[in-house]
Image 1: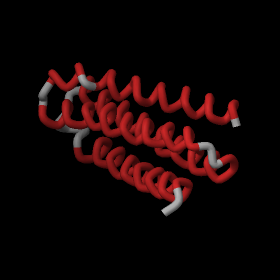
Image 2 (image 1 turned 180 degrees about the vertical axis):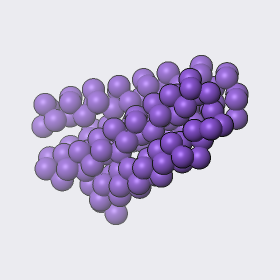
Image 3 (image 1 turned 90 degrees about the horizontal axis):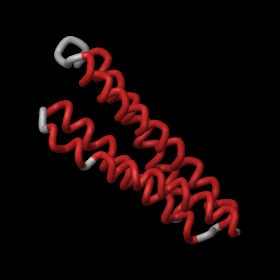
Length: 124
């Protein structure tokens, strides 16, 4: 599978999952979570959706320029979503507050993904 198709598919999957998790949070967790935990869950959903859309952009950029570094940005977005959003989902659903210390690592991966994407496009 070519990188553009891979990242487009991953972006579509993460976007669909984001919609499902958002609905779950809004309807299934509204009466069980504190206001703060619900806001944290919504932050995880929002960042997942942003970066699902970013993966669509990565797929498009790779199809345009085929710069190998563009693939790195895609993987950084995937890793960032798993660590950032995944740690927030797990923190809220399990109460394991120590996971809050892991979340910034995901944020760093997301920021790095944007930086690598910009760098690779400007250098192409």
